[in-house]
Length: 76
Image 1: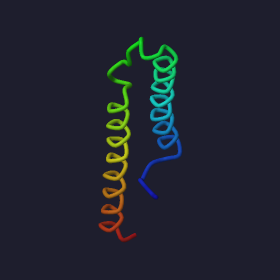
Image 2 (image 1 turned 60 degrees about the horizontal axis):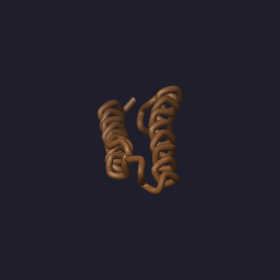
Image 3 (image 1 turned 90 degrees about the vertical axis):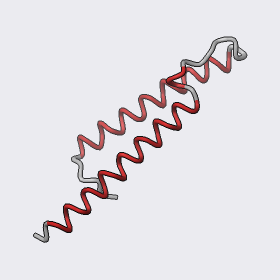
């Protein structure tokens, strides 16, 4: 799937998403090991992570559509 970004831009996007998921996973493990005594930070809870991943996916779909439209406008 072409989204019109360089290899470096793609890598940076991947690192950003993966980093947030790793941090969230650590908080989930700590929360689970504590028997739920230690709360989850709101920005890393399950709903926030799902929303963050959906937003990242929506942004990529939008960039892909823009890239496809630009290619149609420029036949060269």
